[in-house]
Length: 491
Image (tube, rainbow, N blue to C red; front, top):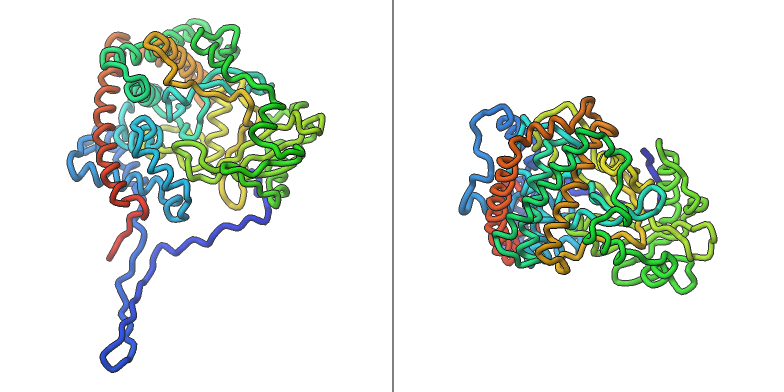
């Protein structure tokens, strides 16, 4: 892992314990100092939830947060979101407030941006189910078109920020809930139609798993334009853009020598040396194949990218411009570096011997496992003492526009996403840490199929109803500025 230098400085953190004092003037004009008891930040609950997960996994009696109601549930939601965003709140990141505003205004985005809240309700569950390299945040817009290792477009899972080894059912449960909520909030579809969409997602997954159990082709397959279903082929068509025009219209200054300053892009050319060191270390990492389209891997410019993402909104994110082979700005590459954090599933999954690593190392491992033909620029480096993940931005990186889906295309899209997830899980024993064939175990654990599908449909409906209630509690608290500070412990 690289530790890179540079001119960027990190603000000193406040100590976790502070003594406060106030000064008042007495009647004779003297100043009197009164010291208030020390105050410290409230402890994070990662260890407490790890213990809860272990208790639930071994069958001990425990009260999971999904059973909380009323004010108890409100305080759980509030504390969880404060804890999950503590660093961003303390650093007073402008995008942190923006994220809470976005979450308040959209139920589906609230679901996408609160994975920790979702998984704390699952702490320790499904301990007997087969473990896979799980994506961790499955929903309709975390599949899409992206570059493969050769820079050509493929379709598949495309967000590994929460990835971790976990029961395969956790990805299924997150996925069916995401499709259920999105089909309602983005498609305004009836409950009956949402049940059918969820079923298609699960069936697409199980059909692919059973196929891989009979014929292990998962490592050689990929969804490309020629073999994609119609709904995804349309996505390929919409995604395609010429690199030169994409760079000129969205990123480069008029001379094509660097980034153009906009509301979203803030050039920081002083950090070229820092990110050149990061690129050099990425290129020196095991398994990296220097693509000819990346020229000499020379960094031309760096910018801060503001306002991107949903769950990651408010985390530092940089775009790095790499000079292309022609050196005229028409074929440059853009590599994104985003500060990584702990997975929302950490400490919540049933105990296992599998370990994907921490922060950016974990994310890079997941991408290497789950996307057999994936982006060569996925990696992990350390910058200014923090863990950063990297990936290529491409002209054809594109997610589905859910508003364009009809009832029939919702079902078709759900099915292909289920199949794509199955492929990523099936690779857990090819490129991951599993030392046995995972597909037969998943197929057996999901039997009888009709019961498994019905269980997932019921789970989606119940989890969505709980989320609607949580969203209402969050919106009320947000109106009262509940998320402008973190929880503190007062002695």
